[in-house]
Length: 216
Image (cartoon, rainbow, N blue to C red; front, side, top):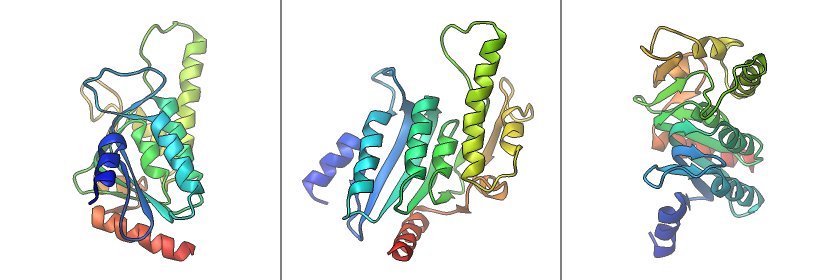
């Protein structure tokens, strides 16, 4: 691997793969929104990812995008913006959930044309949360409902889950002692229709090359 490629990985976590014309995008740590997180927190910055994806879409030398995910979630608006960008690309996209793709990481995982999760990968679906001062008014509740609807509608549109299933998973009381939500491990995410297939990095790479050939 040449020095320029190593520097690109170290600086941005993104790289163009040697074989074929595939661009690798990594979404790691917490997805950072309009506010900067602490320096000791690993983050994916949406102001880095969005221009990269736009440039990839416009680059005739790139045929497809492979997205690897190991994220705890993060800012809803930033996460949905990245997910919408991926979903709107004309080039083939494949995602792979590694350690986990939690919270707003769920829409990111399903935004690709085809999605994988490793056997030990996890996905956590829970209600929307908000930090800071919250006004105790009916309008606040309605606002939360609208944010949650944005997330659930995106997931349902880009996966094979049954209508209403994500909402039910969000408010489940059976799996967390101090919280609401559902945790899916590996094959469970496939069985409910959220993810297309259990696989590994080799599965994801083979699939993106397969989709690129079909797209020619």
